[in-house]
Picture 1: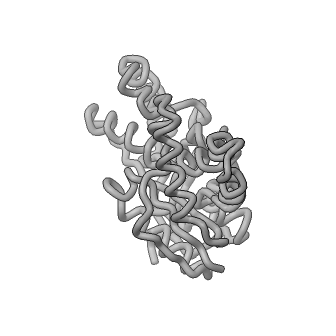
Picture 2 (picture 1 turned 90 degrees about the vertical axis):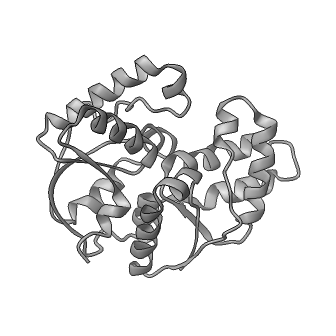
Picture 3 (picture 1 turned 30 degrees about the horizontal axis):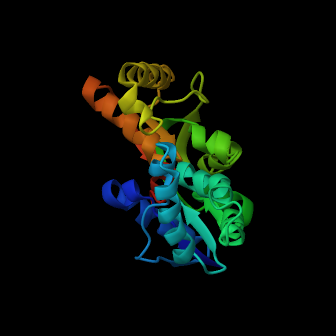
Length: 239
């Protein structure tokens, strides 16, 4: 199965190893993985800030960059959810509407693709630690992802997964929300991190590095005994 990689800007710049680990897992699951180096932003930051015309210009390039008929897979439910749910709206009543709807049907978050398309839940990973899982708002609400990550994690040798209280509650990031409403954002992160600590876990796992980046910053600032890991990094562990 041929797969086109969709690597969000911040993953490319800050967490490239997660992208490489996702490739390792997809290839082990039998996929032929391709990466268009011309790809750029999907347009979500501009869209969320209200600059729809600018977002449309960026999104139009995305439509060209991913114009093949392949599946599109990304390690971020936030960016995938934006392309899937808002591109048809962004290009409504335009010549690109059909292309937007086509891409909307072909784009998948990584764990969603492993579960729904490949039906692969065990990749030979091992990680001997106790961890808790954070349901990102984008994964849960934009992409309707709940069980797929847990299925994959349940097959990681040595991993003890425990659920934290309010695991579906926002971590406080929300893109520019964390900048515009910093005190509220920090309060939400504090609650999320301490719910994770209360489980006795030493690691927080999620599908979204944006959430993990928010929590990691707080954890380091407070010098707390927790680490964060993207699920692709977990699934590529122990080979």
